[in-house]
Length: 186
Figure (tube, rainbow, N blue to C red):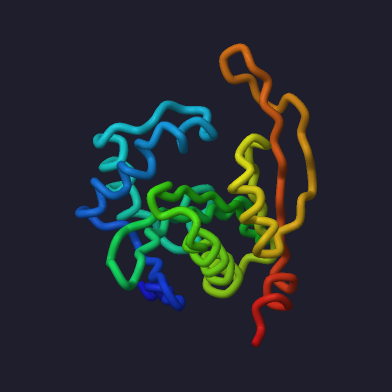
């Protein structure tokens, strides 16, 4: 199967998950600060291994299944995070974006570069027309990243979910294929 991977940018490569990614992914998904915005506890090594194993059966274009890409910094070859793309509607060419990054690599624009490259991949290789992402309003770094790459805020859901005794608001961001192309053509 030709899934047109890896995706290479100036500083990163995005590729499928590999069995030796466990420790690096655990630093992302097992991180308490990241888990705070995911409505689930930090992951265990077993959960990370289950994700890696499950991704070996995911094919580009499988609807309803997150297609997870590892973001690898070219200079250090370190896994800095992951980006997930899920096709929600094949007929309507609609997809959903998710991402998580190791805070140790924060503040250098790597997440922005990776998410923008993944959007380009979703619009070209997956032939999606519209991609959206939901984000906890308290997760300012994530929603600012989406604004930086040109996604627009489409909704603010008040008390969208209950976490313990606290009601949490969500933002929804989206981008169309032609919007991505307009901002990423040289």
